[in-house]
Length: 295
Image (tube, rainbow, N blue to C red; front, side):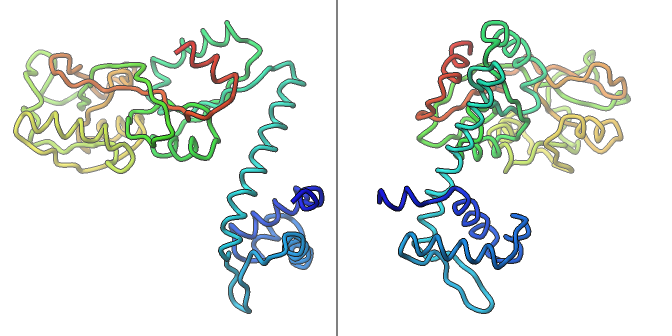
């Protein structure tokens, strides 16, 4: 094994991963900007070094065999670690001492995250923050792949290797067209809207949040008629504005500057929407530890 590791080249791993993902020499070589013959030669050298074939090949198909499937996991792990180390080195050369990669749902940036990020930046100016807006399911996926360090999501359905902390609770708000007959002066409860069409986040994208809306409606004796689905607040507001339905969103998503829609905060019901911070138990990023101290 020592002799293999001494001879193994990072380039060969990257070429192997590209072919394993494309399962097509032409597509893989194009993505790598090399010729098919050069790619084929590198793959054969890698297999010769390992002493086993990684692909089953015929005139029509290329597919990973068992050894290839197992080697792909290790190759991706190695290249991720190399990229992570190089990023850390580059950050330190630029005056930074670490980086925290953060995923977040859009509503988290409306109220909760900005003061937290400001506080962390003032306390740890040497640590770089990298932010990416992602839906719940995407955050869980990239957390598993170690592409982000911590996610802020509206879901508590996590894997056993994750840690979770509730960081923010808030009320829901109804979103209605400005011309709607229901206003804060005559609003009594959600049951008044049983015959309306609703615009909601998709169930498969945010099951916990979706179920909360269903439960709120159920308590007033109806199941919402869902006419449209969207994961973006501005899209939901535009649909409501144009009479395509009504919605229920986290109160922090309110857009008070949009005078074509009306918000009614549901502050007299027990249901709250919750924001969670999620990270992997075995994440050894020292910068993450400092970030978690803040939250």
